[in-house]
Image 1: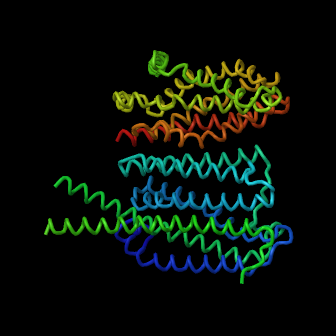
Image 2: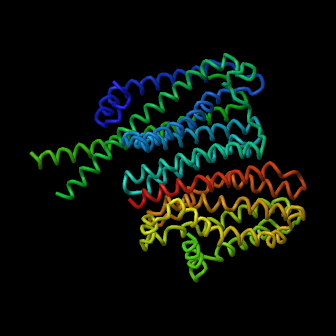
Image 3: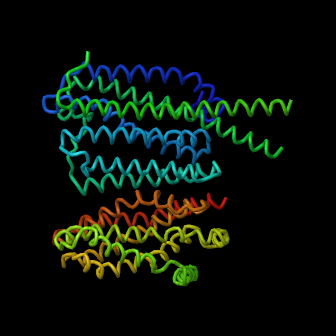
Length: 242
Length: 53
Length: 218
């Protein structure tokens, strides 16, 4: 039993059809539980008032926006090295989800920034890098759209993903250099000093797991769709030939 | 039941609304496209099955 | 390889090759921004570094799709791919040719346009230095983007979308050098980082671009 068995589309379809309802159900549970807990049953922060409740959306979506790109990078590498189609399709499936998470992180960040920093938008390093990350997602998706042959598209987007990752990191350091920014430090680092207090930490953990599960469920579902779409194209092509 | 959100109610509520709307959008688009592709595939498979058999 | 470089330069300079288009665009940006912002010279002095860098970057973007598109259409790219020169070398030469007809003239023209934007005197040296160090990266990154989109019809807009995020670090460090230079501050760190990005891009991106071209020619 090896991980690479799932590179077989048939095996992937079987396993994912079994796993998808569980992952989806768990993600709904965790998301609903975490958000309700966070929204209704946590106290206001003494400095930030009720805006602290935005953390339950902002932090998990920001994390997953980055993790989605990392997942795409790994999937692209697997495609380039081992030529498993499922891997390339999973990367394609993940991009719109990552873009959505980026958008959520930006929107909630703006709504949080307005009362806290007194402005909707500041050219703060983290905000700016997220905007750039969003552009990377857009470019990646546009390239998938534009190339007709699916294998060519998979190759080109994989190369773009690798080069893009390097430049995304460079941009992150560049904007840091350019502006020190208003954004608070990491809320989840191992360093207890700057961490958020436990009251917020536990519901936040539930929300993060909810976002992770939601991402998994969506990737599974969209990859299944992509595999079916690929098969549909192949069958239609055969029909035209016949 | 509604918690007291104070003067930041607008910011908090609109962030929740916007985020949930975006999540709902991506889920809806994924489900919708998934269903459509599945249905089309079923049609084509049925058609080709007849031709071959 | 020299022959290829000379051929590319000839093609670019010939009428309709797009040479001068970038320069004209750069000039337009430098003229239009003061018209839009107003003639206040202190405001202009403050934004001049950024405007000049953004203008140079956009002018570079204009001619990117020509790097490979024409050769792809008439089939000479297939010949180049099968020629004894490695494809990575071809990409590097083509990026160099692009830089010679866009980046270099832009660098030379920038001080003249900086007068229009009222750039403070100490900034001129750093403007030229930062453009010299940064524009090669713009050409190489652009060549990579052009290699990705070479098979796509009307890929110009897509090319811009792909390339612009990749230009961000170069733009930030480049403009930072000029900004600090204009205020007579220390510029060593951003200039080194800028040169580092250029060196890294020149060394590595031809491989990625050549891989993309091989995929597109398959």
